[in-house]
Image 1: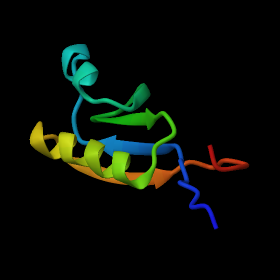
Image 2: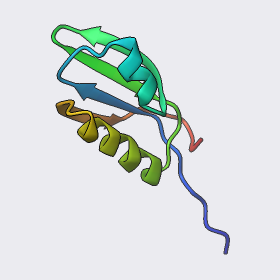
Image 3: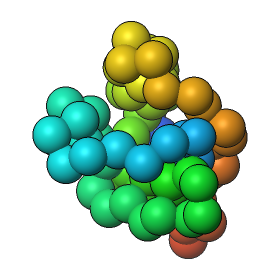
Image 4: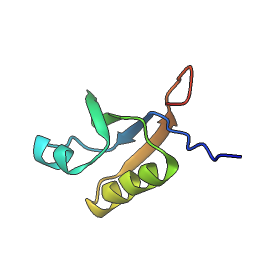
Length: 77
């Protein structure tokens, strides 16, 4: 049986506003929205390994992580 890698989109909320230069350093982010004192980052479809890598980049940049939500999708991407 062949293994299928599931890719999902996520919304990651961080506790700061990031300038464009820092945003470019975060691979996998497709769009972002300012929400008061925080930002919501929407990702391209990521597998679990890529999601963990992105969270590690956020940690390495000393950005406060507020939440991670899996976005609704009708299918695996």
